[in-house]
Length: 192
Image 1 (cartoon, rainbow, N blue to C red):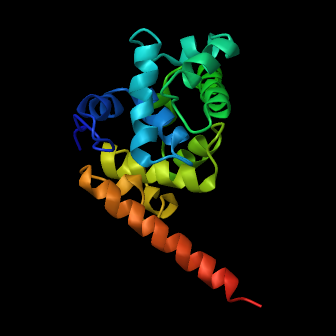
Image 2 (image 1 turned 90 degrees about the vertical axis):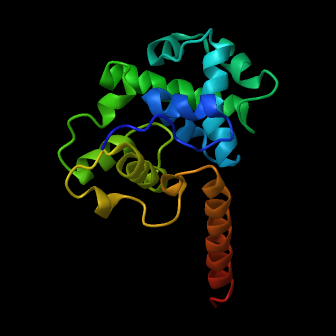
């Protein structure tokens, strides 16, 4: 499977191209995809790159003084609903990549031999719990062709950003997420 030229997670063509061509952008977008819209989370890496002088580099972000990165995240428009905590998480993610993967996000999935290995590598990242990790495994498999043996068994089996092949699908996925949350809440409320 050839790498796509864009991942259509935002209405911004430049942001979509960045997500497909710079693995760190995709990883940061996934990290930020909580308590904001999917399109805001996945557009943020482009804005971050612009604010950092046109380069998105894990080593540089890891080494930044925390107060400087905090300012970059808080500058209007803020990069996230919770810019302070998400700036810290982004820096922790980049520090992890520097320490474990030479600062290369794609090293997380290069050479993986099994779905379990891939899931374990993603789940070891700061800010990536079990569900977010499973969604990212699905995204890698469905959109980037990263498909080690058994990847489908550990990938998210619910509608997620991994299923977005056009920006129009973002709204559909959002509605499916809302319906699933409502059903879960209803089921919990009906239990004695």
